[in-house]
Image 1 (tube, rainbow, N blue to C red):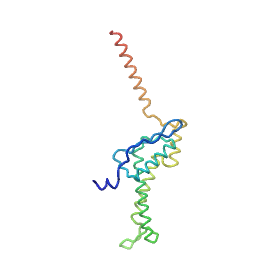
Image 2 (tube, one colour):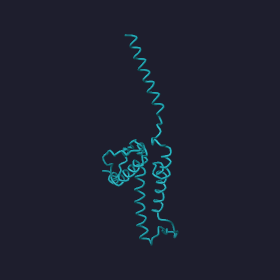
Image 3 (cartoon, rainbow, N blue to C red):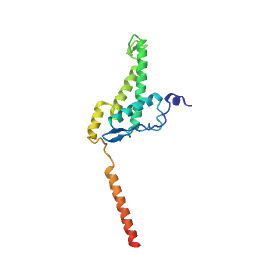
Image 4 (cartoon, rainbow, N blue to C red):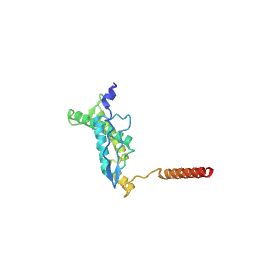
Length: 177
């Protein structure tokens, strides 16, 4: 088995999450995207995020990839922060180190945590996981709490056309009979 597979783990079996109600409409959560191989810890974060979004009534069925990125990045950030704290504890509560040339600079773990935190701050609003982004999503959803159907008009046109074709075909078969 690949050591990376062992480290990352795999998704728990797909389980149906209870749907939360948003103004009478059930809000469902997506399963983790194929290939994400969430570790048990990452899966707990996934469940936490999806539960929070369901309780808020925010549609997120198509946000699986973004939520997976947030879960993995969040766990990496937490682990890097813990490592940085351990380093600071053994370095007089400082993350600064002295290079072989005598220059003082932040330890590499500082840069790792800063980068991961920056990635989280970019992805969290995309998944409605910040207060401003969730408020904006609620405002866009309006009172009905439903997400716009991007293809609703096109779908309605196709259904009407199909019905018209079936009706013409039925009339044509009556004329020939």
